[in-house]
Length: 177
Image 1 (cartoon, rainbow, N blue to C red):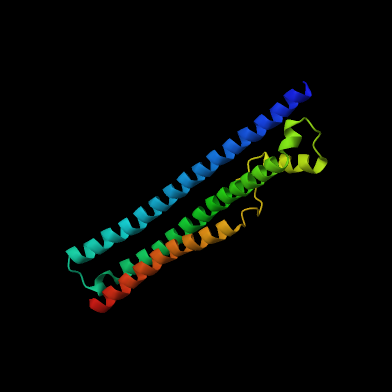
Image 2: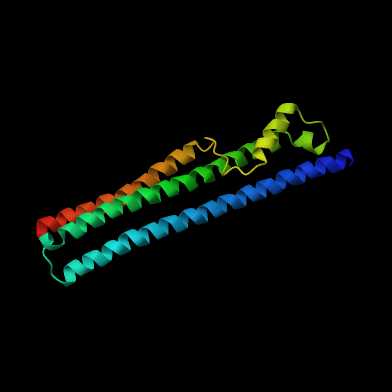
């Protein structure tokens, strides 16, 4: 293999990896969307059925108190499970984003080296070896970026807000009935 072929191979590998990481980010977004819509459908759909039964039968609060308490506990566990699942996929997404950013920066800085068949330094080879892998499942803490921290707060608000809203509805029903 000539130096030119080697250079083209590295360029192609880097481009292929960039496309793959961009696609992985899209897939993570789809998975997160499915998790969240499934959670909200299950969570609020279940509560809608419970409350509809409560209002349709004109039942007193005392008669369904144990059902509401049980459903509140179930809702808390569903919310915790949804949150933990969501966070797990969010970490994977941000690992990929972080590695894609590093790969783009490395490529921009080292474009001449890759294009002109210069020998890569040992540290560049080591970095590339880490960046040209499946980032999402790496198990590293590379996801801890400002974007991740902001997204995590938003997600916590979504799941905690769901629980709080239902608890407020139950407390309101208790006062009314």
